[in-house]
Image 1: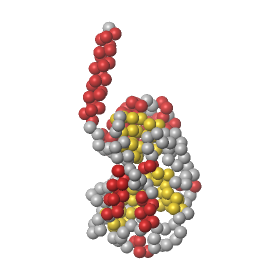
Image 2: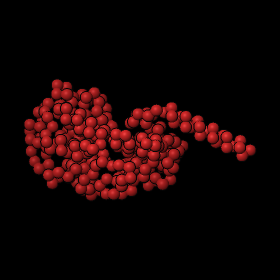
Image 3: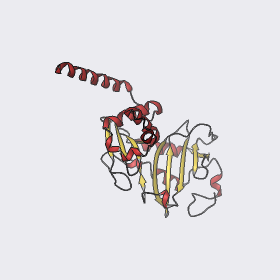
Image 4: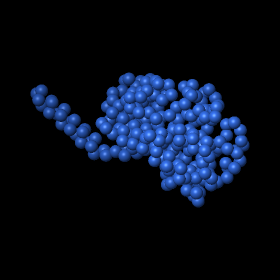
Length: 256
């Protein structure tokens, strides 16, 4: 990697294994809040690892692992663990950190150098820093919150950002949820088969007001059953459904 105003280091940064540079650490830690237990643990994991090679996208796409490990790109990319935009040294950087797999973490640090890369005209943005009750990071736009396990999890939807995440109240982690997969399961829940709606995920945000909280929760539960973004005991939801059916049946007989 040639040294320039936007690069993270000189040619030595292509020699592996190596330690993360101070600049790389600053950028990565900027989206891993130290005051949140889940993200603090990830800081500690990253601190213990070395850069062992380059990922599929090259340059700023790096693989962190144990010093003597070899990069294995045969596995599919893991879900995004943290994401944001950071202003540093006069440049704006897009940063993503993927979930750990077998003591390896894939990261990506790239310079935002086009207006189209920064549609919200942000100076900085950190989805990890969001807490229940907050507006959307970076621009203070509206966030819809849906509690689906009181005291444990909240679904957050930021229409302007076109982002969905699930907030873990215990460890404060915000798990970013891919729109397409979530939307597919929402269409299954709603039994919508019209291709003009079902095949256009971006309609989700413009039609957000048309979905009940129960629709959004059911869609996430179905999505999570297959993609396992968070650990859930599905038996408790089944119990609630059974109780709800009993209540409805009792209500019918009572009216009769």
